Length: 127
Image 1 (tube, rainbow, N blue to C red):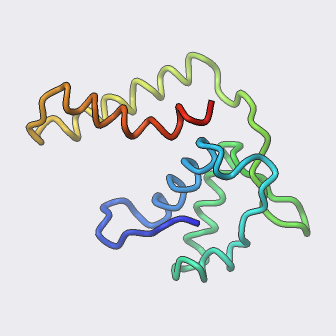
Image 2 (image 1 turned 135 degrees about the horizontal axis):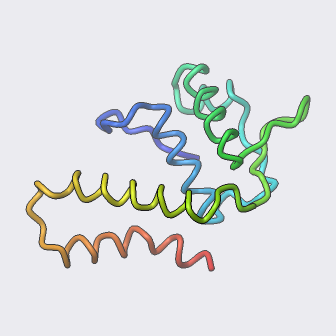
């Protein structure tokens, strides 16, 4: 399902959130897909169940997944969850974070754009 990298600077719960968010965004996990239980995913990833619960909680608050009482956790139907202004604000914030993170790496802007385009390919192929 998703991979946890021990050398990754992100907390494990963030890696789970980012991994599931990308799989949902690319359609690899389409709406209605049943996700493993908190304990099940924790066993698969060999992480603490509280870590998976925290990740599921964040994805639920974003409206990407939903828990159905007594049935399990499922990928939600896509819907517009944020206003256009809020989406734009979050995009600007993410881009500023990206630029500040890569500024000191010494890449030419075109190299960064090419790499970014490759990273976005899974989203483009979904459409």
